[in-house]
Length: 150
Image 1 (cartoon, rainbow, N blue to C red):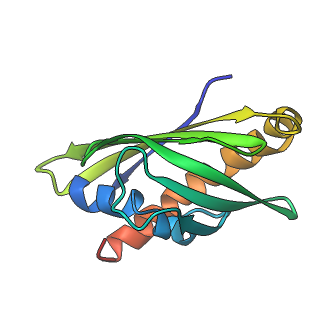
Image 2 (tube, helix red, strand yellow):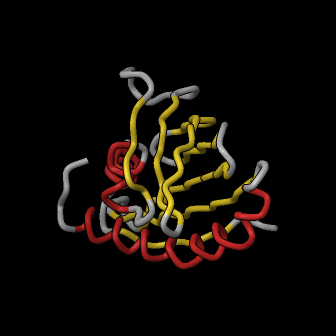
C-alpha cells in the first residue's frame, strides 16, 4: 500500500515549523494518538537519535522506538520505527510559500507490521491514521499560528 499523504499551509516560516515538528516532546500536543514521548538520549535531535513514542490504538497503548533517518533543516525529516508490532515511517517536507513567512507542510506516513502488527496495520492502524492525520495537521496549524514559540 502507498503512504498516507496530507498537506497543509501554515502561516509560520519553514524554520519555525521545522523546529516545532522535529522536537519530539511536542508530539502529544498536536498528534491525537500520541500519549507520551521519552527521549532515549538528551543530545540534540540528529540523524540516529531515538525516541520512545507511546500511542493509543483503540483502548490499548503501544510503545515503539522511532529513529531519525534523515534531517535536512528546515526542509525535510524522516523517522522510522525500529521495534514493536507496528513500525511507522514518517517523512515530512516543508516548502516556503510567498516571501518565506508561510509554509506548506506535507506528511507522508506508512506502516510496516511485524507479528500481530501484520493484522493490526490494515484493520486498525491505517484506518485510524487516515482519519487522524488531517486532524493532526489542523491542530499543528492552530498551535503554530497562535504564536507558540518553537
